[in-house]
Image 1 (cartoon, rainbow, N blue to C red):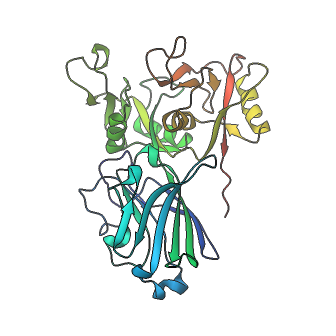
Image 2: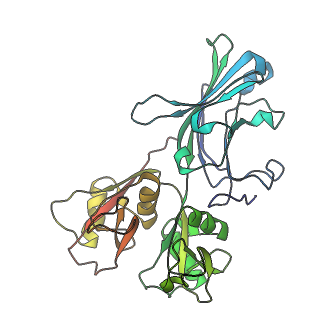
Image 3: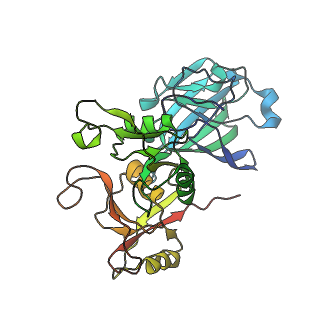
Length: 345
């Protein structure tokens, strides 16, 4: 495994749900990618590696000059797909925001495939990609591949016990309960570069305690020290690193407020589960989810996501607002649910 600077995660290629159906391959690539040590240089920033292999039966026939390779990013809502890369022989063209940062893997390696490497991946690159390999007459197509590119989110977490009550082992458990892991320094650093500002120190996976400040102020380590990651000598909270929203996060409309148990059951009745803290952060960060209604989450906390600050709804900044851990019998809130994607095996 390799730690690659420039992205809030360990870079690790994970192949999931691989199915072969008449030269069709469906798999998920999650951005927590890693590459074999010989394949990536240390000075390269984040690369997403999307596979598109020639079917085994045709690999001996593969001639770069005789095939056209085309990668597109599948649009949502039935819109036209976005061109990413086309290549035939030594001729290659990239398009739009992908110009000068998408390359064929075969440009760096002597390999008979059509995989691509995307450099400097951002949240805008998340989505489904399609690879087509066709004969020079554009009639016989050998391969279609759909790849889902995923992004992961760093988010702070205060447990029910309150701030400053977690040792390191407790932090690990708290993250696991959120289907997450304790974040690394590099992950927190990249989240800080992306605007994460949290005036509470938290555990990282190396056992250190840090907190990210983008807006220096007296109450958060001083206003004259400049923005950055700050050290703290106390044992405090935890910073989670969780996977992208692979499903639907939503507010469940109800005719009345709910207790915690009623909230859990309401989501189950809607063929979903009550959302976790990581779900609300991912929906807010990656999809701009905005809802000025406080709702129950799985850990018993009540929160609401604001992407468009306005009066009475986080007027000073976009944030996931934390209401607290009220009595679970209290009937004062709605609920946020999460419905996972159905994946074929």
